Image (tube, rainbow, N blue to C red; front, side):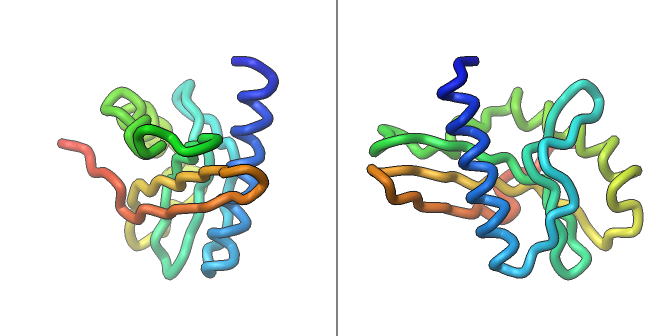
Length: 122
């Protein structure tokens, strides 16, 4: 991954964390690693823990950044989440998978938060 892509991803995670905090979420972890995988953000609100994947794009993307969270990425996030549940929030009421999309057009960024963006088959 290039330095520019890493910087874009880090900036998107910062904006997503700020946006979630402004919406009343408590950020439990950033770039949390477990099971050899990473979860961008782990946030909690009203006893529900959200494992949040952050996707970033510049300009007008042809497709939503949300489409980048394919079945492989979902399985990776779930593997890490199984470990995170035990260490970060064992007493939570519920858990879910969210996606935050951060899109820049020029200097302006737009954050889109998709609650319960995907579920995994048992």
